[in-house]
Image 1 (cartoon, rainbow, N blue to C red):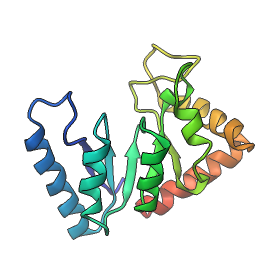
Image 2: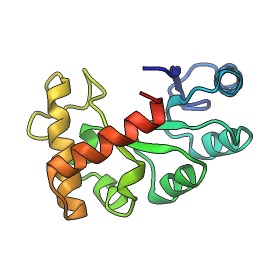
Image 3: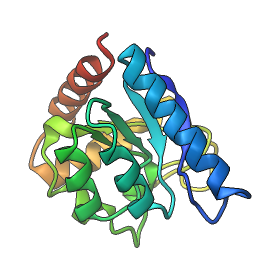
Image 4: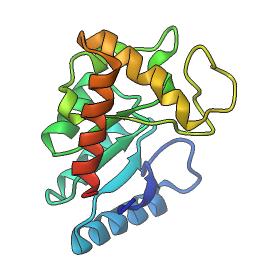
Length: 165
């Protein structure tokens, strides 16, 4: 891939020193802007900070890896030029993500494993692997009234466009 390495959310309660991570996140965005490459970021419980920080870098694009936020956050990210990537958590029984995914345009969606984590149903709780993205794609196809082959083609094209492959 041709992106700046994945960066974590800047103020997650899971990070020990949020202000340091905010600075690192901004530095990653500055680097991405300088060398004109997309970013891959993980947002966990940091919607406001992520949106505020990304809005200061309008020339930076990328993907919200392992998306788990609301439709409103997804829409704002898409409006800023970002893609939304879904992992196995899309398939979980009580997940709100199917409601989010069905409202998003397919030309802004990616699928991923987040391997070795978040194995999709019917493999939840087991080590994840790349071949299991099929289950995420199958659910996206169902939500969008499409076929898994169409979803595979669209998301492959999206990744190709985003990462200039």
